[in-house]
Length: 213
Image (tube, rainbow, N blue to C red; front, side, top):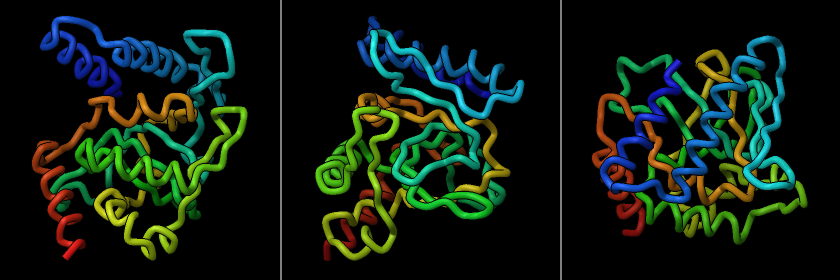
């Protein structure tokens, strides 16, 4: 289990900055809960709701991979089948599920985008596709491939379009509620293998720029 890697990533940022940013404090709280709740999930629970730092509705839940729901945003650990031939891959995706199939799901892993492209795409999706609910765990960003592919303003979705198999998910899915989407989007917790994030982001940015021509 590589959950410790997330803590180490955040601790490294703390050491470099000399302090703990508010979003990093929230992140530490998040992942400490996630680690502890895994034990309950492994005992047979397929759905766990988390408490929050303040009173109110939970803004996190943990579900089995087979219960990934379109329009919801998830963190999870993943090991792709074709990892030996892939030029790069992220073992800790932050994925907006688009559709679920018999053996997996397709979604947008925002870690493949540089922060400014990530923010722009997410803002556009939120402004046009959000389906709000009073419960942050039920608010959705419902998008389909056909919808995104047919509108130019969504073009940044292509580099982060990925397919995930249930069998290759190495942990349950940590669902992020709508009130914490902004936190999740910019956490430095990507875990790219066989490449560094700067190279992955540059390739994604170049791909997006080419589509403008």
